[in-house]
Image 1 (tube, helix red, strand yellow):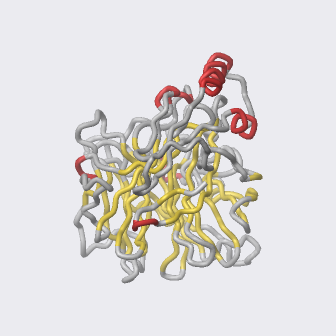
Image 2 (cartoon, one colour):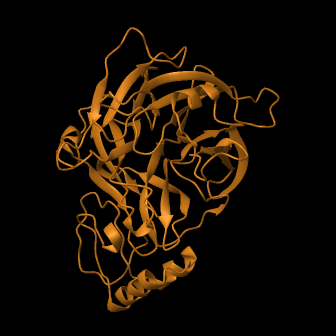
Image 3 (tube, one colour):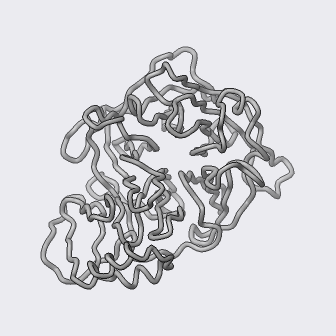
Length: 379
C-alpha cells in the first residue's frame, strides 16, 4: 500500500492482470475523483489483503470478495476518522474524530444506525471543545479518537486532545445516562481530565480505548508513537484512574522502526484470549497514496498480555499480524479501528479508510469472525 504498491497478506492469492496495472497508472496520472463503486468495478480481479488464518494461496483464477471490492454503507459516512461504536437496544451509535478541522456545529460527531449500513448524523458530544482542553493543549483544533463504553450505569466517552506531532496531550471523559436523544435525560456531562502527557514524557496520552472485562475490571489502553501502547486500570465507580493501582503497563512497541509508528489501539476479551488491535505506520498524509496506515493484531491471556502475533513475535518487539492494508487503487490507509463484540447481531470492527484518488476518509463497518481463535475482517 505504500505509494500505490501492493502489500499482500501471507497466504493471500494475488492475481493482478495487465488491465489493472494500466488502470492504476491512469489513476495516478489523472487523480480525478472517481466514485468508489466505479473504481471497484474497474479493478474487479484485484485480490486485496485479508487474513486467511492458515489458508493456502492456491492458483485459482476466481476472485473472492474482499473488504474493498465493494462499499455498501450509505448516509453520513464521510468524513469519518477513528470511529468507535456501541449498541443501545436496537440502535448503533458511532463516535468519531473532529475530521473537518476546527468544530463548527459541534465537537465529536455522532452517527446512528439501526442496521449498521445506513447511517445518519445524530449531533455531537460537545457544542465546542471544553475550555480546560484548550487551556492545556495550545493550538488544538479538534478532539480526536473518542471511545464509547458502558459501565456503572453510564455511557462513557473517553476522548483525546492534542496537536499533530506533539505529546502535549490529554485524555478526557464525558458521561451520559443514555444515547437516545429523544430521552429527556439525554445530556453529555464533561467530567474533565483522566490522564495527560507533556513534552518531557516518553508516551503520548491519546487514542484511548476501554475494556470492561468479564470480572468487572476496567482498563484504559492508550498511546501513540513515542514508546508505544500503554495501559492503566480504571476505577469502575468513577471512570478515573484507580488510585490503588498506579502501575503503567506497556503492551506494544516497535523498537526497530523509526519514531515507533503505532497507535489507535482496541482491546477486547473473546473466549480464552485478549486481542489487541493497533494501527501501524502513518495516517493523514497530504497525498492519500502515501497513507500507509494498516490494521494489525496480537493476542494474549491477560489484559496486559504479553501479546504475540500469529508467528509468536511479541508485540513489545514490533510484532503484529496484519489484518488489513490499502490496495493503492481504490482505498488506502485503513486504521483507527475499534473492535466491538455484539452478542445480538454478530461481532464487528469499525475503522476508517481513505478513498482514492480524492483522499476522503470513509466509515467502514465490517463483520469480525474468529477462525482458529484469530480475528478475520469479512467483506
